[in-house]
Image (tube, rainbow, N blue to C red; front, side, top):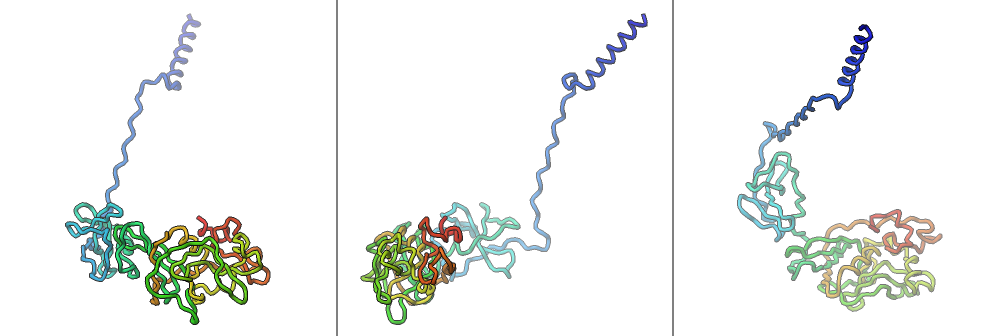
Length: 319
C-alpha cells in the first residue's frame, strides 16, 4: 500500500512539473500589447505670433511657374505644391512657405529658398521660345559666363563659370551672337612664337570662340591626348582676369560642359557689365605628375580625361 501511495505521489509531482514548465501545457492567452499614444503636435509657444500672410514686394521678379490662387496662395507648377508668402517674425522679413489647402502654415515650418521663386536679375530680357533652350551670357565686368536654361517660360541659372575674356589690347565683341561650329581640338593662334591649341572650342562669331586655356609645349601638342598634359600654367593662373586675344577661355570642365550641352544655335550675349561672381578655379599642385618640373606645363584640374591625376583631388568635377 505504501508503495502504491509513493508511486501515485511521484506521478502527481511529474504532472505538476509538466504543467509549470512546458509552454504547450499552459492554456493562458497572451495579452495584446498596449498601443502607444499618438504624440500631439507641438503647439506654438504663447509668446510666438502666428503666421502672417503678406504680398511679395513689387521689385521681386516672380517666376512664371508661380501661379496666384485664392487665400493669398500660389501654386508652384514646378513642384505641384501650394506656397504662401509671409512671415512669423516681421523683423526677419518675408519668405515663401509651404502651406495647406486653407493657406495655413504650421508653427515651426521652415521657409523655402527665395531664389527658387525669382527670376535672376541677370537673366536675358528676351523670353525663351521653348523650355529646354539655353542662353550663354559673358559678363566681362566679373569675368564670368552664365548659362541660363528655359524652364516653365523663364530663364533659370543653370551654371556659372569663371572665364578670361579679352585683355586690354584686344576685344571680345559685345552684342548678341550664337554658337555655329564646334571642335574637339583646335589650333588657335601664335603665342610667344609657337602655335597654341585648345580643347572643346565653340565658335560664336568669326574667330571668337569659347575654349580651354591654351596648350603649348612640344610638337606632340598637335595631338589632343598629348596636348592636354601641356596646358600653359601661366595662362591658367590668369583665369578670372582679362587675358585672352578676344576669345573666352574656360576651365576644361566648363568648356567640355558647354561643348556637350549647348547646341548649335545657342544664343551668346557678350556684355561689359558685371554678373554673378563665379566659383574660383581649382588650385594647382606644383609638382609632378600634375605639372612638369619647371612648372610651365601641366594638367587642367577639371579635365575629364581618365588619366588626369587631379581626379582624386577634386572628385566633384568627375561625378
